[in-house]
Length: 497
Image 1 (cartoon, rainbow, N blue to C red):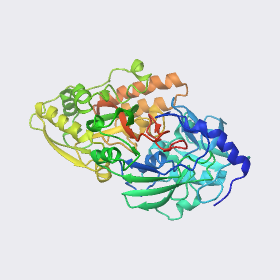
Image 2: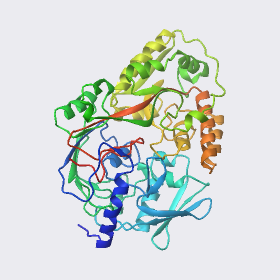
Image 3: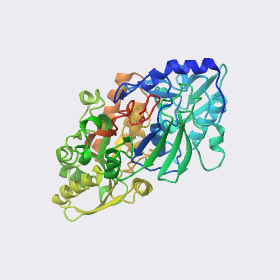
Image 4: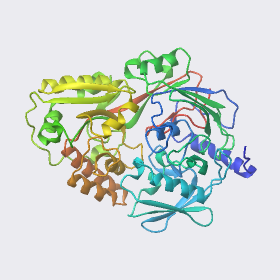
């Protein structure tokens, strides 16, 4: 194992409280390094892409404390230092990021050359990682331990973008295979993979040379349990210490002392296929939207752990409600009588199939004939993106990929978007999103993002159903779990039992 200079290790210990305290934790976190017990963690989503950081698995890696980028988000959604200890803007298209002294888990140094190579590899990912949707980016080593990142067009939120789990920095070893990226032993976080058992389990050990100091848990034993009831039972019977995404139907079965609920920027929506099938017709989409009563989802399906859908952005973004504009350009609803549609969803989040059942009833009352398709997420995503369903019920954390409200619109609702489940391609939407992307001033960018939201909602390609709170089960002996509204963090330096 590579040994860091003593001054770097001591500096890491001083920085550790800043890193572990970035989000609310379930109890006070002890200070200083510890040889604490291993943590047993039950996760909802099995790896779908062999732990590639360029897709859905990126968040899994960050939640387990494996990967990190040049920046991270604090509780207020502001970009703060991670592998980069500072940055400055050279011009409207160029930024310089000064690296801190750090090591990869394979013992090699985190250098400007290595960081530039890692970011360059991310730009070449197919499909493009969501954080780079619509963004052309180049990275190169500069002098004095710095990396220069340049974008083809001005990008005022680049430090936010580089906090994305999809832009995690990995060592050269991660790219040894031409068509695969492996974070096993190649990342920079406080925990490293030592064993991966397919899509069912993973073993992680503490990375003792982590620049931020030694984690208080000696390792993590992770199990991927897609069934929410099974995850909750594992916590209740003491088989696991932390269970993520506890179903609302199971919340009451957990003692209040081990149940945490957190407001998030996650919205559950009905996404309608605008490219083919019945919902290609704007009038049919409008008919579906008018048939839906969002209060039934918040009160019934989510049992009060959600708010009725008001837009793409929920109340966790406190500024959004006051700036929300009415949808523009909506079509008049047409007749739905006898129209057959297939609605798909996934069962990793147990509320979604129940929400789909309620949705089915509402749509059928309006005259639609509805067939439901329920799968595990890893078996659903590719078909959904290919437009093989008429509609999809999906839960999406709007701030997950970049922390920028505009970026999620670019990735999810523009012609070139990489996660465009409704397959929307609308000139008015693209223009509104492009306008918002060009604005630097924070308040004006927020105004423009709400105008773009209004344009998206005006197409009826998306019908927001609820804005969620997530429930995390935390064992009585466990402290320091990260309750992250952006759902990027779960286990950190101070998590222990």
